Image (cartoon, rainbow, N blue to C red):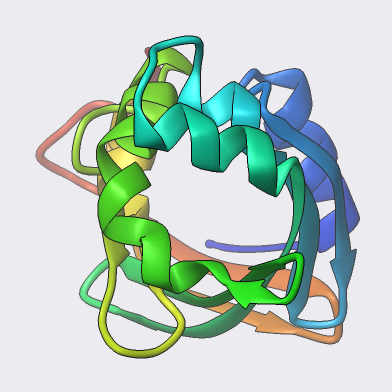
Length: 166
C-alpha cells in the first residue's frame, strides 16, 4: 500500500494524537524541512544544576530538521539549532538524557528516537517500524520519502501478524 500525506496533515495528526511532546511549539513544514521551537527550560525541567541553567538561558530555541533519508526502517533528520548565536549541538551531551526522558513521558517507546551526536549538527534517527508497531500490528513500513512537503510511505501487511490497532 502507498500512503501520501501533506506534511502539514502529518503534523496535525501527530499533534492531536499526543506524539508531539508538550515542549515543542510552532511546528510546521517547509518543503522537506520541519521548523519548530523547543522550550529548553521545559525540556530541562525544574531540577537544579548546569542543565537547568542552560535551559533557562537558551529559552525557546528555533530548530530545523531536514529529512535526509530512510534505511532499514529508520528515518533520519539533520537538525540545526542555535540559541543566542551558539550552535546547540555542543551541549547535546548535557541534555540528551533529559530529551529521552521527555520523549518517554510523551508516550514514545524507548529507543524509537535516537540522537546521534558528533562534531557537527546532530542527526535524529526515528525507528518508524518500532513507532508504528506501538500503535498498529500487522503493518510493515518498506519505504519513507519526503518530497514537495508530502510524506510518501510504502507499507505491506505482514501475513504472519493479524492487522489490528493497538
